Image (cartoon, rainbow, N blue to C red; front, side):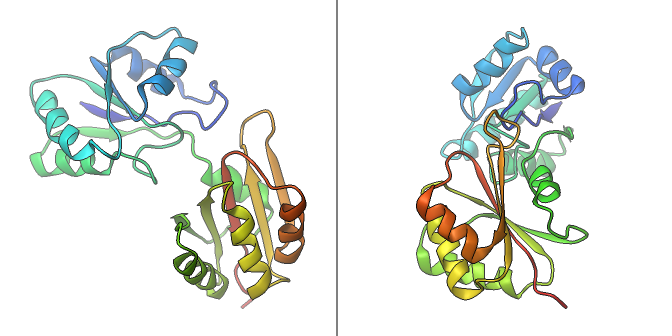
Length: 222
């Protein structure tokens, strides 16, 4: 059995009992970063063999894991934070399992998307998740324009090195639009910046936000 196990996005206690049991019972744990996974496993008193599985070797590992699953092994997968496959490795292994008719399961658990949405105070009866905003400024602006045109709230992952530029684009295109920067969720310095695009852009110029960031943009009023 192959099991995708959501890992804490910050606080090491944010993992389910079922997730811990799955890790204890696994023959091997495939990890995006074995050093990062070791910290989580050690914290919970778990010692299992580790296998690296990241974006650069996932295609190769997918075939290897499929063969091991076919041989009867139990393999658990961890990414650095949140649910595997969501802007993280995992997709190729799932596709390989489907293609070969191998059993797998996805556990519910930690993700930054839902806490960011709920804590933002923006409407969340509908929302659009856009993954990571692109590095290139032209493509990033195009996606931000699309977000501003939507009726539902949009959420992106964003780098602390580029969040200031993204907020500046928002301030230029729609200075009065409600936006939120949710950072370091579940960690000691968890923080929500709420306000208009112009307000948050000005704030970021004076105090650039650090850490893991979700950028939320309210949809236009219908």
